[in-house]
Amino acid sequence: MNPIIIYGSCYGSTKQYAEVLSKRTNIEAISFKNVKKINAYNTIIYLGGVYAGGVLGMAKTIKKLKDFSNKKIIIVTVGLSDPTDEVNKNNIRNNIKNQIQKEIFEKAKIFHLRGGIDYSKLNFAHKTMMKLLYNSVKNLPEEKLTAEDRAMIETYNKKIDFIDFSSLEQIISEI
Figure 1: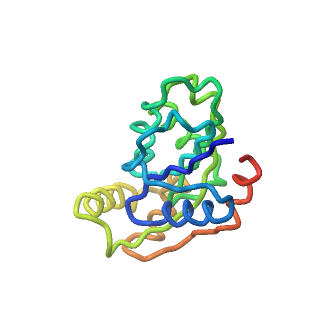
Figure 2 (figure 1 turned 90 degrees about the horizontal axis):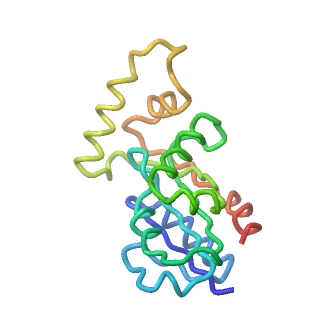
Figure 3 (figure 1 turned 60 degrees about the vertical axis):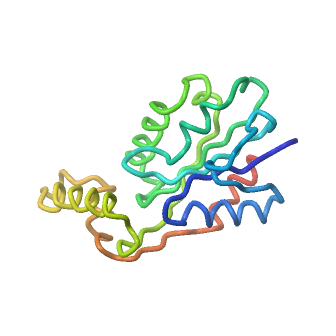
């Protein structure tokens, strides 16, 4: 087995998960920005932060795979919304499906973890996007709110940390 952990993290939650997973499995963790020879690995564990529906760096990284027929691919998303909520899970999976080849999507094992947010550390673009999203849902009737909408309203402009390293056990079992 020649595995690698690759991660895409903007504010640090995904990087924290990748580093702990690396320590627990003795598998090297590297940022997607620094991956050179992805085709040399037969097990690829990709952890990516969910931003505006996309998984940071995943499409760019997976696109580098030339032959994935003999590779084990594990995709792990890290986001603010509750990963046990079926609507959230389906939305994330549909976004992943739109970012990578159908054959890779069908082959990959996909997991969802919960991260965190610190509004004071968001860049201008992300702060603006979050404000627009918040303003678009804050006055919706309760029955129209999704679990993701509720989570955003509850956490807006706060520092929230939902990181749970015990949730890595399911991924370690899969590896």
